[in-house]
Image (cartoon, rainbow, N blue to C red):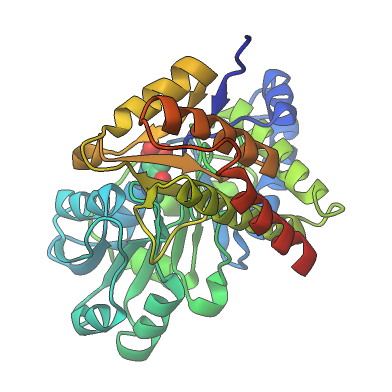
Length: 392
Ligand SMILES: *Cc1c(COP(=O)(O)O)cnc(C)c1O
């Protein structure tokens, strides 16, 4: 049997071939009219992809660079900020806030769950300068209620800034960035936009720009005001990851092409694709006897699954790799061995979902010794898919 390598990880995700070709052909210098034209085109596309009238900046860094930029550009030492955390990436906000001398008030939810909005409301005191959260907590595959938190901020702490790590939320979640009032929304290249790691993008509201003038934290490479001055001219402050910018342009063209060239509609289709594949995966794996790790607020970006007591999720990860050359993600930190995670964000379609469920039937039977009937997982996924296509 031959085996095709397949990534089912929530970053990096599978690469779009058209983007790979564009990257290979991107033999251009960044201080030329050719790059400027490409960069301006991609920045305009990103605004539509994020769905905002705010400025959108592109940084040559992984997603965490943009998270750091949000903290360093918006805060000053001693600032009280609210960090909502329910996993490894929420904990990153806490650590970044500490690193830049903020005094984070940390509201946590247990792994696998989301926050109680009543608790968020209590924590939103008038001194809170900014709220940091994830749209989707990739480490537990939980989706958080960004709209609910945004409403609370408008209601009771209107001066506070809302900063959202949408690194796996963008392309898997419908946002109304300007309507809800998200001041900074961050995305990363190796997630829903189908290209390799190395770029981060973020939308920045007028309120956030105003806050930057007052912030006293140090910044240099990630000085967003300097970056903005350059990017309005189609330039970058430093040497950008030129090939990735070319790849991103090709990927956004592809997403637009899924809806006849309309990028906004293409984005909506991409989000709905993730939603349907996530629901189909949950249904299929539940039918196989697995327990969903985040049943109350599952993300469309990825699905986290608990293995039965006494079993090790590392065995599932290893067996899929060895037998089917398919890569899924283990749990992170203390969840390693307890859960595995399957991604749906970016360049995944329903046939990928069916393939994974088919392989999982073998793993459940042979590796986990569960009582499996062939075809046990697939019909549940088929029903979800059929319902979604007939109702749209
Ligand atoms: C992947 C991810 C990050 C980290 O991004 P890097 O590109 O690894 O720096 C941050 N937040 C979330 C929710 C993620 O999924």
